[in-house]
Image (cartoon, rainbow, N blue to C red; front, side):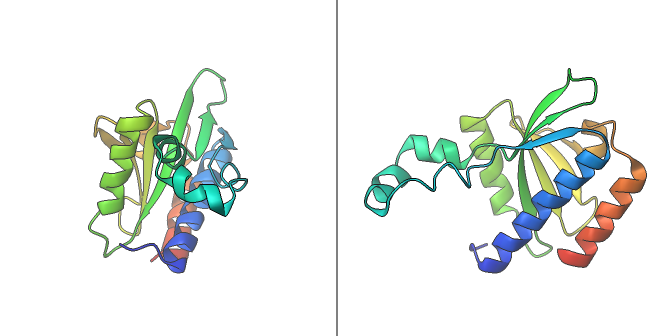
Length: 153
């Protein structure tokens, strides 16, 4: 699926829904995405930088650091949105990025179809988000599923 303004907006909405789900379930969520990291690179240097391995690693960096309420469980999460008509190419790409650059991170796939939230590891294991993050409140999960239906379908 090509990157379009609509896909960018839907990806941001998906990130915000995941952030809301985790925060409302008493996880501490800190954004660590690359949006601000790359803004200082001028146009002249951008072409060289964008072709570098360092750029690829930064672009693949996790979206969030998530800490459970005990403070012992820490997770790095990259968020990807998968539309109903998607063939999953961006998901395969996301898992490949994790395998190459961030093997300790997990990929949260927000999908327009059930189960809506799936967590994948760099070893291709997957589980519903409520199994990977056991503090998730079912009421909050149901509300976030409604948000997906309202804004991402």
